Amino acid sequence: QVHLVESGGGLVQAGGSLRLSCIASGRTISIYAMGWFRQAPGKEREIVTVISRSGSTTYYADSVKGRFTISRDNAKNTVYLQMNSLKPEDTAVYYCAASPSTSVVVLKTNEYNYWGQGTQVTVSS
Image 1 (tube, rainbow, N blue to C red):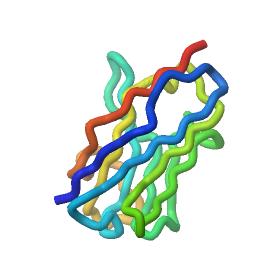
Image 2 (cartoon, rainbow, N blue to C red; image 1 turned 180 degrees about the horizontal axis):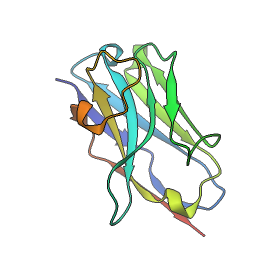
Image 3 (cartoon, rainbow, N blue to C red; image 1 turned 90 degrees about the vertical axis):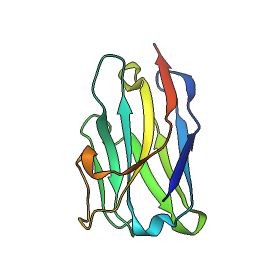
Image 4 (tube, rainbow, N blue to C red; image 1 turned 180 degrees about the vertical axis):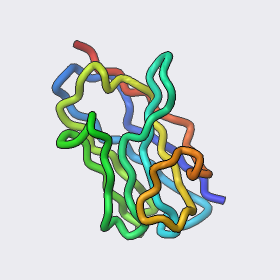
């Protein structure tokens, strides 16, 4: 079983940047597709971005395209989310997750079996 821990969240002004990290232990992340999800107050959890096992394929929600970048370093067992040009609507708890699915890009929340505890990102206007 893989254990995931997110870090890097905080309070930032609109237009600013943050980098989130997801550090895994217990298993190598190379056997998992990885994703970042977020949940804003009163809303359901949604996909932000996902990355394939090799890192060769990525997916981004329309709301973050051009602003966010997902990357992975399998040797360090770490996944990153670089967030630029942050907007107040990006405010949410951000979660890292791992999926054992054989699909190259995993878009269904239910296919992610392992989740971190979440880290709060708050963007002020």
